[in-house]
Length: 289
Image 1: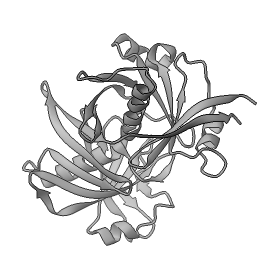
Image 2 (image 1 turned 30 degrees about the vertical axis):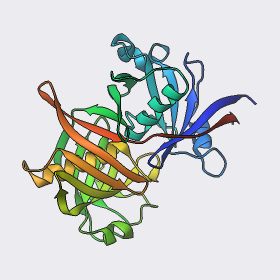
Image 3 (image 1 turned 30 degrees about the horizontal axis):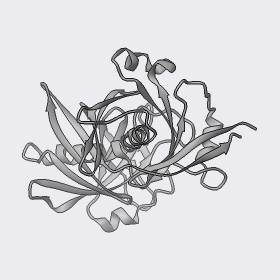
Image 4 (image 1 turned 45 degrees about the horizontal axis):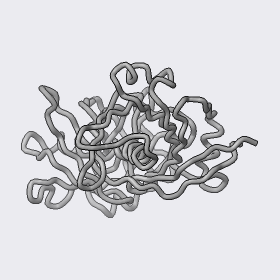
């Protein structure tokens, strides 16, 4: 039975199996990924980060042409492909640095993803990734969650992957919802969505920084301790509801820790940026099922 090298890492508790495959020689099936991510029979993780050069993967052609050497091949715990992962890309870059594949100085490091090339820089709290522009979908979506009573309206936010954000009145209700079962959306988005449940801080803004608390159910995974793009989407949704006077700097608390979000113009386009820590836990070899 063949074995592969791996490293376990996480960003605020959102954990990953990192598999180095620089030249794109490894092909992992959905079933193999599901076994690797299984918390009883495998290593255990919310997803897989395959470290591959952009030129060595068909989906990396555009990234390679733009000069991004590395491509983050991110797969959910069930083996399904994901467009982007905000915590994953910080862990991905931290692995590249620690493994000696790259040197990260003052200039951003560009990483290919299925939602385009993302620029990552160092930050006081770890790394910051420019997630790019976002879109708001104001179409009505109702979300029903077990333990949450009547369905509640959700706001669609796309930050390279789809999210639906639901506001809750207080932290007792946030704690009380049951995310062991998948929340139901009506209508169901064509490609599914991550679902965030958020409670604004009281007061919302302190010293120019807004704060919220959230939990998330990730498609293809279930509840996770953190979701980077979900953190950004949640901040953007509450900012949208708060109106034009809302600040551009946000602190978002998730079960796994705290992440920073800020909105900034890049040329004439407003982008959302996510910052937070990245940790490598251990490395080893594992037999492929």
